[in-house]
Length: 260
Ligand SMILES: N[C@@H]1[C@@H](O)[C@H](O)[C@@H](COP(=O)(O)O)O[C@@H]1O
Image (spheres, rainbow, N blue to C red):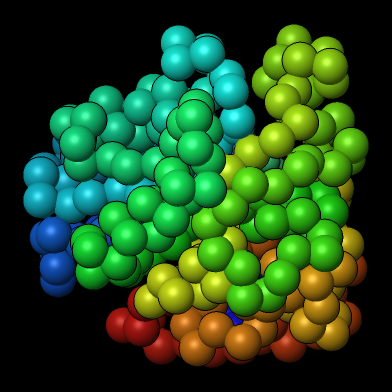
């Protein structure tokens, strides 16, 4: 696992560099898309490169991590709409180039299985962007999630609903109680994991994910078992890391030609 500690703007550039390098090497790459505030600067940077530097997404595809259950199709916070707004429309992705788990399906288990098949049929995810919840969730895999889980229905913790209430006018009661999310096993099948975390509220989750025991109590800690995982954090999110100085030194000594 590589840990990079840098200001938030720089972290977004590094993540965008990794995605750009992938797209230049493999134009039909499959990108794993995250919602939440953490990836927004990355999406801004990718949109800028698309417009100003001709970075093409024409052959690429996107697969979303998760979705709320039963939000109306036109709801501002439905993740399909968030992804459309924040990245898909800005890089001229057609609707069929972006897929997400269907949180409005009548038969949710069948929809979750269909989503797993769709990811596999696309050849799997090349690079998965991730944020992390304050309780250590990735996607919406809350504490206690099976480390081998696949796409399925989950119940959100009160903490996650309170954290996300800011997207629902501050009213926690408006935040759905259920979601469908790629499982930890699904996420771990992506070929490169790139997680972004900023702010002091993420410091404990980052410590547990990088340095804690691998445990369902801190679901992101499963990333320690991934052969190519990159954790991009600012100073505040890195403030609980025991080996922070070592990660800084390691990154400072890294050859400039080597990407993430
Ligand atoms: N389901 C999403 C996650 O995919 C996201 O990574 C996380 C952190 O969100 P943020 O980046 O806004 O802190 O929580 C949300 O609930």
